[in-house]
Length: 507
Image (cartoon, rainbow, N blue to C red):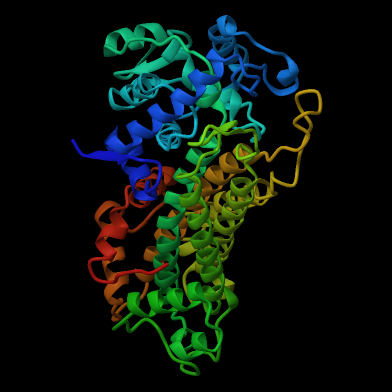
């Protein structure tokens, strides 16, 4: 079993994917344990001396002016979790739950939160032993952290709520017992330390980002196959064109297209068949490249956030306890809105390329890529379905971060809606993957109508991988099953693995 060491400083997007999908385990470094213990000593001293410090010896939000005695601290922390567990909607899949737990543990491992080491270890034990709390998707405003969903994460630690263990949903208490993990009694500051942070929005957005990075490369593969199917002009991808407008994403996209189509006899030169292509072919570097630049920016923001302290108040080594605003999700809200927009554009241009493949008025191929048109509809309605997803993406891409609504009696009077932004971006990613799968399948169908030509070194690998699972559509069949198989090649990463054996793709 591979293990990731947590110290709050160097967690990566690859680590997140490995914990989510490959069940990597995690453990605290000795340095992290020492920092956690130091922070806890400061909190214990505050309680022992009855100092008035927000979140430790006071209520929360608008109740910050209500003092809490040392004897009441345990009740305060438990009540915080119980009252804040008011989420609703579908439950997050276990992969996202695992990332939520990972990110919260990593933030706490930095030693600025005042949690006890054994309480943090309980959360880590749950992750490693696969006790996955049931966490509803909805209920967070994305400021004061993801309070409601993170409270649902904490419930099984207290022997409350529900969890999934060994594939079975049961009470939190039963799941903890079966996993052999003792439940905890929270003490001063611990409830707040566990729920005041941006880990839910960041977990959802991180998974969306991981998938988006794959889709960037798949988009270049799809565009290359479509360009070959339509006998596209390769001059537009000349490196000199990119050099005079040197955006990194544009340069890398053009290079990918050149590499993927290297040695292809499908592609043409200016003036051979036509003088120029439509924008959906000619402007692939500019459109895909802009999305790549956006997603590279977002990745930087995410990898900063996953190694940050986002709770409140923050306990510093010198004993200062400062109530600030690091829980506010605005940096992630803007990033995940941007992510949704960037990925939606990949679907937009893909669907237009799909239209050029199936519309006989725009090419020299059989209408809707089928031999006996009329008797068969071929790929006609695949474009309808793709267009539907693209239109849905346009609605989902409306930014959540431009909204705000006051809460906690106007004490918390500006919120980020970052968790909504993250959830929307993940929906856009899923829709876009299906659109790209449709384009890939249609491009392979179109290629099979042309004879005596040779595919490029990278596109040939993509074509082979698809044809290993999906045959040429001779006559109408149940299309969703074929599209499902193609989409699975994207989701599993197999098409990327096969293509990158020949053509290393850059983003």
